[in-house]
Image (cartoon, rainbow, N blue to C red; front, top):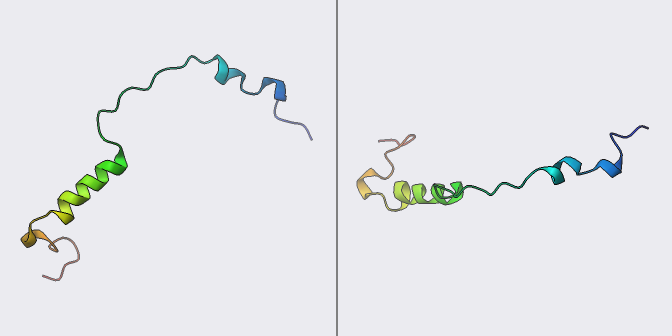
Length: 58
């Protein structure tokens, strides 16, 4: 079976591409941001607003 290119050419383009430094993040990473939002909405929410979202039977 024919191959998709020879192994001598493997990684040629990637090694020739100049390395660009990553830009600094302006926001926290999504996992951290989701946890902070969860704390604001559910854990530290005022008692009267807890349970009044979708699916509540009030």
